[in-house]
Image 1 (cartoon, rainbow, N blue to C red):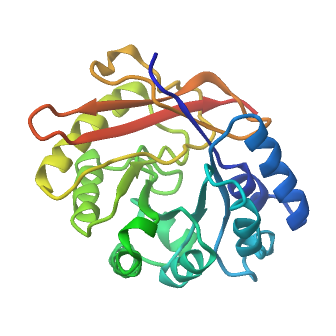
Image 2 (image 1 turned 90 degrees about the vertical axis):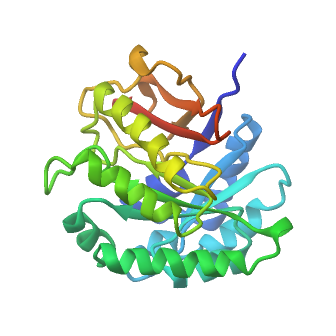
Length: 270
């Protein structure tokens, strides 16, 4: 039986979008319940401006509290190098930074264009590389709006793959294709997965490609059977937003290079 990993993102993605601020104790109680249910990877918060997202002001304390479980992967989101520094200081095991392929979306989301975001990613990678390898957290880049943007519309697939290659060349551990807006479809997923592999082969030092959790879908289920060599790998989840179709992550391993790429999609119903 293939292994399936459930990566919980509710304490970050869920709480940042509601006005009510859950206490640190409440968040840790939530994380404890998830851990008790068998979840071993949880995105517990984000290191962003407290003025913009006061819901995330206690992320360092949440990371510290969650570290009591030695077999729990504690993930956080950061928008820039300053956030990465805070994540490293707090002791997060996985650090994610979003790079929206829609430049308009990027400017609205993190107030930076593509060139500025690539500079931030390079700065974050430099910080992570300073950590001793045995203690070094996984640094991943989520290519947001990879399957379409509600502001700009369609995102050119060749541009998606080109940006994936550019990010890989910076030395990051993981790169993901995110269906941020729920506009993706199975055909796109297949083409992007194949293109992702092409990007891998362009970067000889690269060893891993992954994917970030997608948002609520528009009605398309990205679990089509035409993906060929891919197989279900990971289920992203948030309580109360369970997928109609199982969230699927497919993995393809290139026999020549030994490299592998992973990309997934899910359709959620509120």
